[in-house]
Image 1: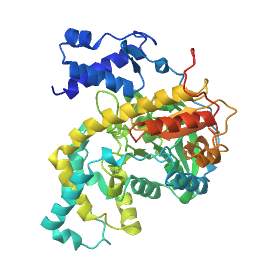
Image 2 (image 1 turned 30 degrees about the horizontal axis):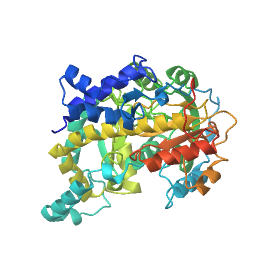
Image 3 (image 1 turned 60 degrees about the vertical axis):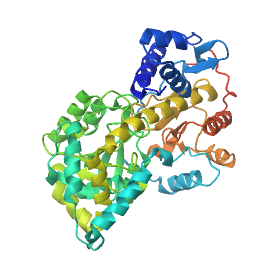
Image 4 (image 1 turned 180 degrees about the vertical axis):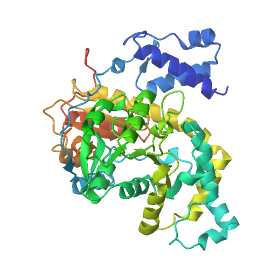
Length: 482
């Protein structure tokens, strides 16, 4: 009998909610497969699939001849807390250490826990191969176009305008600039509105690539504390910008990296109004906006911007393929300045790949793909959280991501994740130390893990061995862990 995916996802979600809410406590026995099938009018195979999904997420365990039980690892862990940040802006100096960490983590035989990359098997690589072949055959002129002139392919811009309907309001085609990745989009925006020596307000902790961009452009970073659930503190931003001196605000409102936080709409509205009133351009990275774990696509800060002050940047590298190297920015009133920077720094973006992406978006395949990907990433994040809860020290705090596929972990204060990184590498393990997410070197007892790969027994064993390095047990959860 075939399994009904939507129905098993719904049942798994309902049971997970009962577990997280304490209705089903650790050690409780779940209703039997037959009972759930009868009561919910579902097939046995659908119920089994739902329970296996919960098992993969580390929420339940099967006991021979006894049924399914809520795992002790499902005990709610404390989350990290927002920290006080330095009052003064400071230069950034992380690039050399960051490159070492990422290169070491990419070596053969090292568990893929550092760079935030999705597993190849989760991406529509075969469909993209077919599209490249067909587009090259049907549009040979795309291989003949000069690249020295900035060029946005109308079919791709049209598809982005259509997709912007789910971002709060359709964006004008005239706002878009197609770029070579989201990284280039962020870089162009910074170049358009800042000068060397300027100060940029950033999240704390902040995505290390953003900090690296500030470093290469000679900009200073002003850290603004972030709540692990709701993102950047608007009160702290208001205070930090009261006397001027901030040239731009750089943030990830939806699925921040590394916290996975999701800024509520009211905070987004306040941030848009505050920055517009003070003439502070906002550069928003929305690369994880489509990878939400909730019921509907969260709106970006851009949706609450009526002044053309927000530059919305994103790409498809986290959901289609990192190798596409196609990003974009909807730059508002800064569009001309961003387009100029694009022309003088890299010229036009590959038109062949633009057309491939446009045709993929037009086919509608991306929405089916994203529904599957969101479920998969959510399950992988849940499984990683459960593994960390099992294997890491008792007082470890674990973030509760609401989008994306990275996990932020706060260890006991005496543990220095930078110092312990070399030992982890010797054992074939890697991660990104927390201090690389802060220009002031905060978060030395924190780390970020990549959850972009299926949680295989090999990945689970890597987390077990990593937990042992940090002083955790060997996998028997302790009662009463905070």
